[in-house]
Image (tube, rainbow, N blue to C red; front, side, top):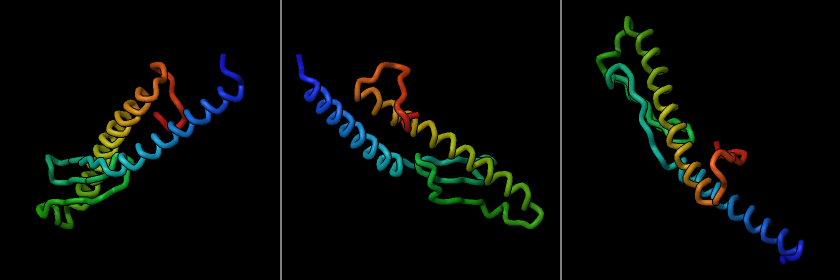
Length: 113
């Protein structure tokens, strides 16, 4: 039987391992890129899985004053599409980390989904 001190030390080491894995996951999430599209590809928004916007692309055909409202709506739709894809990519990565540390299904640590 392990002593209380050994169990506390093992728990601290496990917590440090989880923290390291979480930090690595955050770095990885910022390197995963997703692209949201709207208007059949006329508007595109690129962002990381952490939600950092990398770029916005608007087709020249939309650059008319009378199309302003539609362009604004398409940018918002493309952003929301990118955000949804970023959330899915982030959740997939967090599930990989969670399964890698042996937590039971359905158990969520803070910050892991």
